[in-house]
Image (cartoon, one colour):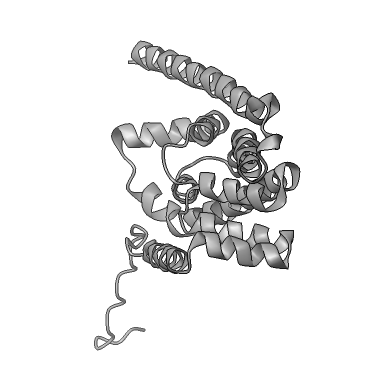
Length: 230
């Protein structure tokens, strides 16, 4: 038996969108990291880390990439401080670590906000990325249109699968890491300059061109399929 004085049960809160402010901590953290990195000077950080060892250098390079320092500068410094082979290995290790951390942060803090607000062409693009993420990541990594760290955060907010993102980053980042490390090493010892120094860049250019053409053909093919469905 219920009493007439019983308070009505408040309606359950409808499942709403993810709070728009959720990415704010990421923005603040990146801004603070970037300000600190540029205030201390990336060159000074690299030299200090190099005096400790390659693992410290890889850690410092990772933080610099997350702070949106251009990867070209980081890879050049790695090559100048550690030589071609070791420098390229450190640069690539730092790139993969920064890519994984940035992607995880974007997926955790940004993806929910983006997914709740997708519509129209943006939704179709996100759906395309979820199905062709490897190609999309590969092209962007080979043709650096934005800071490496920023791309990592942004891809975390898309539907790209983690394995496609990491594999695409590895394939796309390796040629440029080797090339810039070789050029950095050559700046210290010009005798190291040779045709092999630029070979990775040439390979990366060929791969990026082929990937871009494949991407364009894929987009056109799907556009034709959409028209047929309509």
